[in-house]
Image (spheres, rainbow, N blue to C red):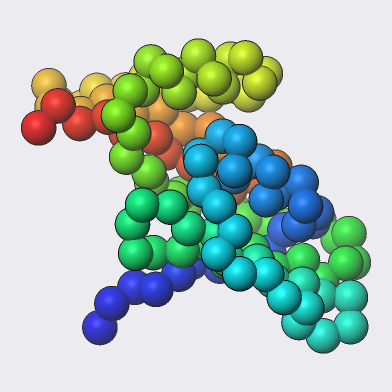
Length: 121
């Protein structure tokens, strides 16, 4: 068994796609209508797992919760923190639980916690 994607319902599909493209460097691998008023977009990067974003056009609030996050490895956490500061996106950290890793957390547009981690191993 292999993880293929993780799904997130979003308020504004275009804004969410722009966020994931600009901040995380992901790109749309496919996008299609999914019924009246609904649309789905899959975003990918260097790895095999994709993110599925679903917008139903209702504009209702999204309830992501705080006990889940998506983790991405980055080459330079300092570069990413500078980008987040430039975009006005607040983040928690950096945290370094051991000498070989440090990471930060920040929310996406709908409250999904994103973790960026830099490993020295």
